[in-house]
Image 1 (cartoon, rainbow, N blue to C red):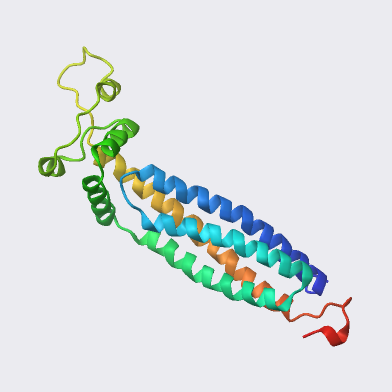
Image 2: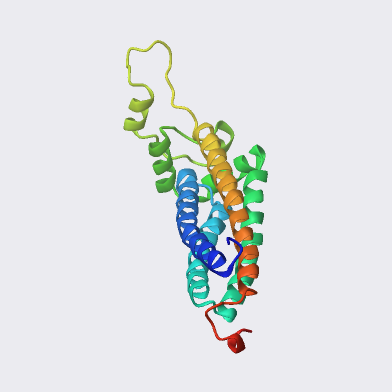
Amino acid sequence: MCGGFTCSKNSLISLNILYIVVASILISVAVYGRAASIVTNLQIAALLIVCGVILIMISLLGLVGAVKHHQVMLFFYMVILFLLFLLQFSVACACLGVNTEQQEQWAEQGWQKESNVTRTKVQDSFTCCGFDPIVDKRIIPPTCDEKVKLRCCPDPNIEGDCQCPYCMNKLRSTINYALKLCGWIGLLFSFTEFMGVLLTVRYRNQKDPRANPSAFL
């Protein structure tokens, strides 16, 4: 019977193994989100990384609690997992709720705060020169590397003036993609955590048929 003690136990063990895989994916996606933007200090992506690390630790606690049917471990596992669900759900909604204007403001603030070394790295990574005409007037942008210019305009005989695109044009789409990816994956995985809470509540209140009846809490 699937609703029995053994089924609940095996389901909870399998779910926690899934959580470890999910946490690894979540951390990888969040790291991509931070690396892809480079100049933008995406604290939202950092929170997803924290959620992933906590989820791995909680999964280990849940595995031990499920195997031993330990009431105290299962209680703390259930409470912490529910709090993690709330945090991850909020962060995922925040990722999906960021509009284009806010993304551009983050990118501009990050560009102005970073050093010329980081700006040069961005230009080389995204094959672009400068941030945008308005920001470049307020700060002294780093000189665009000749290799970058050559990648932008590989044909020296092209008609007209060939110019590299501004980095804002490249960062806009990258930041938007990273946030949406983090948001949807975080939102999807957060519901599996809520399922884990419900399963733990049921399993914790079930009686182990092999245990001493007087030992059941």
